[in-house]
Image 1 (cartoon, helix red, strand yellow):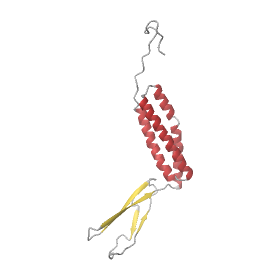
Image 2 (cartoon, rainbow, N blue to C red):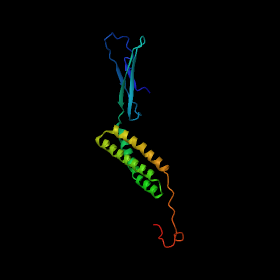
Image 3 (cartoon, rainbow, N blue to C red):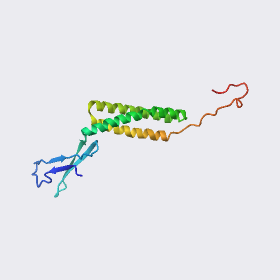
Length: 173
């Protein structure tokens, strides 16, 4: 689908030092993703090597119905972040390496920070930026799950029994 139209689509001539105006209309499809787009306008001639271009930033903002989706996504992610502390504790109890546990804690802190940031945007009615931050949260949660799935574990320390302990020495605690 073409998002734009240009009127007039061509200009026959422009005198030296002159200018001509044309309009670029952008029609965003109803199913377009909420995000920042970049549009490049190139102007060329048929008869010389003259050319020029400019770049435009276009932020596709959510519709009223998309606000509901963004709010629900925030709620869903909030519910999903709750058990992440338990995941880390379970890995610690299973002797995951301290390095992996620390990386997960750091990632969880980032997820929580991004969730707070998205809530601030939602509270201000800035659903464009809320959506962008929630997309980051989605990626961070995927990274968190990958790190949990690939956690490395240390060998548990050997436990001495009473029969293995040297005589007169207490058992290790």
